[in-house]
Image (tube, rainbow over all chains, first blue to last red; front, side, top):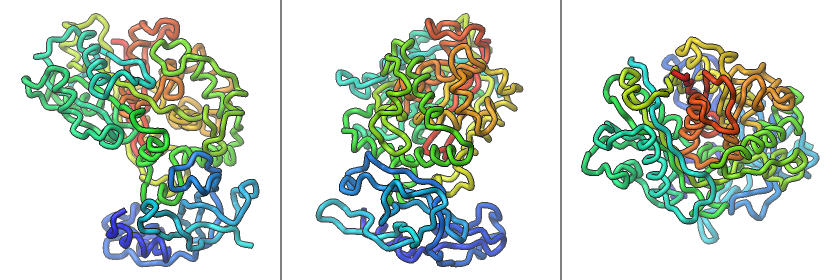
Length: 133
Length: 388
């Protein structure tokens, strides 16, 4: 990953920066410049919003065949989480035994290492999910 | 808009083709289609090639000109265009060819699809496959392409009570169909236990829930309907061609148990054809994963939402059932050379409508449908064909 893209993604990956349509209230993550419902009416009315980081598992899978950069983690849990603001995010679920993961489980985001550009490359960070105890 | 017919078809065997490169398989299918239509090279007005990722699989871009060149068409200087929409590349190439003929711009167009996936290892192929999803917001966070479909499966089970056994039955059926197809990658029947006890890939999906990596190519020749009978006694009419898109990331949808793009494309296609789902006798749908076929047969309107698994176990999608689905063996057993798949689906429907499908012939097939999906439903192409 080139440095430019790495930095460009940081605000959302680190701070859960989202956007909210000033017309209908729909939340988008990552932030969008236009609402998919209100179209042109929403231009210039999209407001910045920081997600609370809490939500519940909508669906999940235990990944056994992983790409090379996640080889060390497998089997790992990946989930789609419906955040309390209504928008959905995809990431790994950590600090839990895979059999304990359930649809509807409450989770929160936590900043973790999500990958790297090869053995000597830049390490990048982002959100993963952990159960709310 | 003019009516458009398919006057020639050709394909390669699907599988690991160590002995042939990308250009060999592309040309093998294309020349077979041209031969089938008894065309002279100078009659071809244009070429469209569906291909997802030759750049990453074989480090070769610019493959439409390459295929035109090695087909012996370099000195004819015909327009040669590559079309990419991940898994829907082939179906979309067909649609571009259809539009070119329907508009009156061209009279005769060759549409091919090809992918050479086994020159890279499985880990790299898995990463390339995942680029059909949202690289930045799904894949980077650990979602593989099978994992995205596994999450669809889990949610479908949760919302509709679909069982693991019902999902697995798709694989059993498609392997059975594949056993009747001499060009299929897998021509062996398997039982339910084999699917259920296979090595896990992305739970709840295992090895036998996933289509394989494949090499292969397929091609069709399109012609305006009014000229089609000069070339063949069995032209197959394209009754409808429709395409729809959706969010690239699965998590941006309100419901992942429906591919809205399939519903929209199907609705448009049935409207254009003046037909209903019950009129279709044979369908090739995009079963890159077992759960994908369940979604497809529901979203296309063959069965109510949530009842696809039950219908599959009841044999309603097998040969002799309400609608024979994936008589070729589908992506699961026939194989899934990504860019070729959408064209190969149409080749199978043409075999059926011509009454030339051999042991897997669906008797009385008059209307056939193909549903080709890119990514997790971000592009869908639906084509309806009729024995003219």
